[in-house]
Structures are given as C-alpha cells and as structure tokens.
Image 1 (cartoon, rainbow, N blue to C red):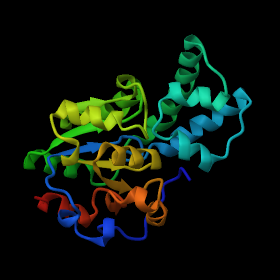
Image 2 (image 1 turned 90 degrees about the horizontal axis):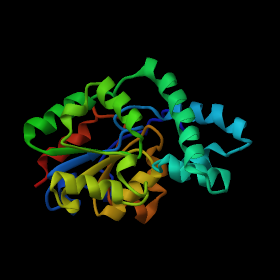
Image 3 (image 1 turned 90 degrees about the vertical axis):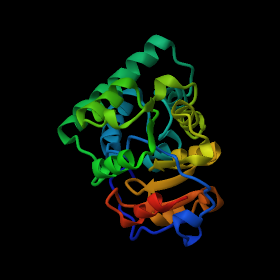
Amino acid sequence: MLSTRKSPCSVGFAGFTPFHVAGISTVRAFIFDMDGTLADTMPYHQLAWDALLPDLGVTIDRDEFFRWSAGLTNREIFPRLLGRDIPVAELTALSEQKEVHYRDLYRPHLRTLPGVVPFLERTLNAGYARAVGSAAPPANLDLVLDGLNLRHYFQAIVGGADVARGKPDPEIFLRAAERLGVAPKDCVVFEDAPAGIEAARRAGMSCVVVSTTLDRDQVRAMGKDAAHVVHVIDDFTDPSLESLFSAP
C-alpha cells in the first residue's frame, strides 16, 4: 500500500468535468500536504514503523494502519496503536525514535515529486497563495521544505505541532486558509491519503489527489466522499493541472 503507485490516467475527476465547471466559484489558494504529495516519503515512514513496532510488541495490517494513521499526529497514533494512555515523556521518546529513523532512511533519497518546483513557480507568478498543511512534526517539515529548498514558496506552513487534531479533522487545512486570509471555498488541496482527502471535504475545499499511495480506482471507490475531488494525477507534470489556471 505504501509504495509508490501510479493511476492509469489522470483527468478531471468529479463527474469527469473540467475543473472550471466543477462547482468552484474562485480559486485563490493552493494548500499542499507534504508526505506523499510534495515528496514521496511514505515508503520510508513505513520502513521506520516496521523497525519500531516489533520492539513494542505490536503487529499491524499495513493497509489498515495506513487507512487510519496517515494524516494523524504521533500523539494521536501511539495511544491508539498501543491501546493505552501514554505519558508525555514516553510519547516524546517513541515519536523521536520513529521520526529520527525515518529521517535517516529518507535523507539519501530527498527529492520532490516530478514537476513540483515548476508548478510552484507558476502559482507564484500567477499570484496564487500557497500553504503547506501537514501533520508532520517540525523536524520532518524542516527536512523536506529546507532540504529541497521549498520553504520560500509558502506564505503559511501548518504542521502537527500547530493543531490539536490531525486529519481527517479539517483543522490543519482551515488553519492554513486562515493564515493565508483566504476563504476555504476558494482553496484547492493537494493530498495523497484518505484522511487528507476527507479533511479537505470537511473543510469545504476542492481536492487534487496525487496517486503516490492511492490509485484512481481507489479514489473512485470513495464514492460521495470524493465528490470534491477534481483531478487524480500521477505527479505535477500532469497536463490536467492546466485547468487549475483557467478557473474563474
């Protein structure tokens, strides 16, 4: 589940209609998830979990774990995973153990998804607002955003340390929109995970799904819960993204 998967095609998704007639009045801002969206980090997160969980005596179904955990903060994941309340000191230590290992694994493979920088440059030149909305802890945000020289593209960065609840709660995306000074209905979210897609729906935002972890059929299977999805793309070189710039 967490290895890179490509969708068979990428076209306007919601009703198979072009973006500008998909019920969106205006587009003023783009909000980007980070893991699995700006960079294909999810396989390295899974490797870090694989290394840690046996030490905790926990056996998981990978698909099920991904379904409920992707988009949550570690302070939400570990208590559910272990089935008990966790003292702050223990939670901090477990989170640090997992995330340090993840960063060590991913650092040699640090790269954006294809087309990320040209797309961000185009949004910058066209005057759109941009934010990151991620449940990642600060050091993970630093690794990707600074390691790939992306931070300067974003007027707002909302991470897991900035919110009380991770995805599918809409708090991350709503806070990002608030910091940008843009109404939720005028924001388009880029996401890869079910919880993030749901968070965009609850926030009242349209969504473009990046198919690093879900393919097009899996998004379609979400039914009405994916009615706000306007495109499913392989990466940011996808020609369907052109329609984002022709929206009213």
